[in-house]
Image 1: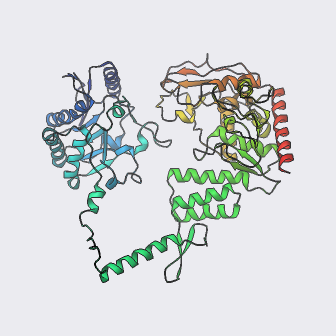
Image 2: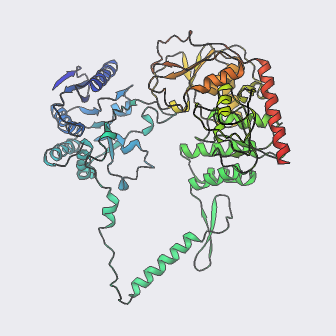
Length: 600
């Protein structure tokens, strides 16, 4: 074993090892470089596998880490897996006074982990051990466990074994899961997780702990009633109480308040039980989808008085409000429209569809139809790669396919398609010949006029939702904006912001479409290691461009580190012709007229 060490200049040290194969050697070099750039003391060792497999190599982490702790008794010791890296080290970690600091199992939040139901507590890919006697006794017990236990297990097993012995004596600090690259839009990540693939390869071969809860439940076994024996008074009472409890759960009757459920006890007494935050959100979303304005708004208002929502719940609440933008309108009979609703609060490109149809019909009510191809009533199917969901009850205008082997229903009514490639796929499926093209997203300047004046001298980055977990490094000249949104006002504010930039870099097609519609210079890109994250074979970009008459372009692959990259040769200023916007607007109008004739 050889080690490369940086000078020990403060009260901590970061350690790791890697095998001498090509993958882990390169990963180890990246880790060393990142730690040296951050001026963090470290010991990163290269070891020879000597025929050992991944499980046996992983368990070597225990004696290695114990050795580092022994050599540096006055320093906090942080382990980091060899194929992970640090972008920085937050002060709360650097200055932690806890005996143990790290991520919870599965990078879970405290609301989800449910330790009694899980097999282990920690995710020791980045993990710190303090200098207290309790902390060092813990790592000594892990060393003893690894030395004594013959089970075929990785380091996680022995760390957990020691944890179950010492947990009551240890202070510990949990690192927010949102500080892992790709896990949160609100926290600045510092930890970039590696993925060698060995976990899946050796899954099921390494020994695992059982969760704590089953063992706890069997500590006091329930006495069995002998067959044929008369029931005791206690048994009869216990069974009656269980039956009454079951009735109380199952006799939920009429809902009296938006966030409450009316129940009756076995004695007939009426109770109103508040809904959980999650259930109340589901009620609100359902009411909003159905256009039940009073119920949805009352439920959303009541939620705010009863619950502090987590991020996922708030996103769903925002989606409910967005549905109301389109469903809670008194104008005209509703248009039934297919679009993708999730991930909540919504994906920018998907939620352009109801906005376009809403505004093109003077704010007519638009009702959501799930994109599952099972809709039994006449409905519209507009922008997006959703033509595969068309059926005999669909009226298609501007939708497209995302790959050439898509299966399309030739019995749908096709007013227009996104582009000629989708038209070829439809024709090959026995469908009609369509030569009317254009993504309705290009109509946004017509339904939401936003003038492009002076710009801010900067570049905006908007990545595709599928690329959200990639850890990008940006220069100071680039501002990143998230793509998740759904509300009409939010979309308008977002487009206004983009129009104010010198240029936009994006891996999302409908951001690209918006830029070419409003005249914002733009570069269409994808990211190294993320080329296959976006569904489809890439034909949709060419399909769109040839459909609206702009030069065809496939996404350019760029590195995850955008610092120092010159984008001038990637940014173009192509703009959708006004005549094409007129043509697409006419197609949407024709589709709506046909819809009304069929519904009426």
